[in-house]
Length: 329
Image (cartoon, rainbow, N blue to C red; front, side, top):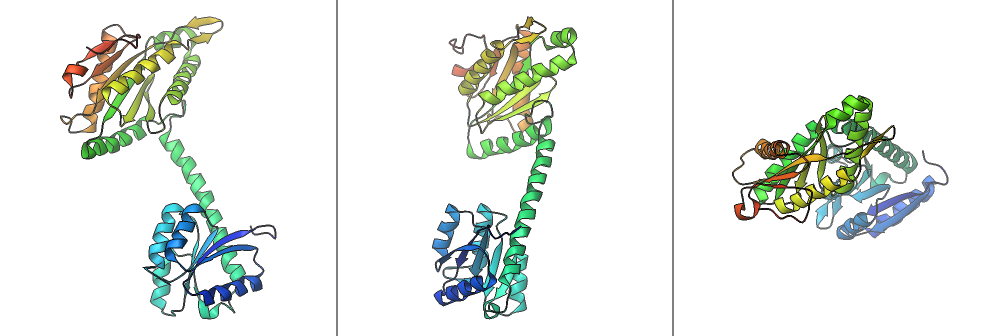
């Protein structure tokens, strides 16, 4: 909704300064509350766009060293919902049709500026932008619901598998490190049996929060199912993943669950694996981490087990107790 107090920021890119004057006059006639920035340079226009998200862009069809469609493509990368109005001296139907097909919001012939209602054109474009942004917010909420675990807010099993495939292929193509950490709570069934499933859910939520506080922005933290969690760690080798596993184990152990005045110590078993050239599919990486987790459970729980093959001298499979200073065998 455009009101008298609303200031609409408009970037105009047009190589003809004489047309700048015509546009200023048209804006004044329309009584639009606008703040306009004019430039004759395509390069300068792109620099301005990178610094500021304008409410609307008006651009000449034929620009120096580029055309409006190339500018449109770059603009949409930065601001996908910013409306673009094409200014042209060409009256060909094909030009207008191409403009709309490529995502231009409206098309104005310069010779008709004096008789065109800029107020209607600009306000309609701004309103369409608002509707698109609102729809994107709704879509984003639906995506969040589809990708997130309802109990913890972590990513869910389905999203994790998709992310694992993408990161696995990226690691394989660019020879970058990638590790997977699988965590399973120790003694969780006893808490469920003693305190009830609702309190068990609180434990799951508590661990989920700890994981979110521990991982980096680029890491993927997911609830794999039940009391099992998976961390997908791009750009992370085994040693760094092992250190993270020890830190997570320490954090879990230092935050016991308290129910009706009774303290329930928490701990976990953790398995870690790194992507290697021997793995042809992402599922193999996950399987090796799961096998390491099995070893952690089998050999006493409350530990981190690392499975690695690239550097056997440094990363021979080993069990690592809580003592973070203990090195790998």
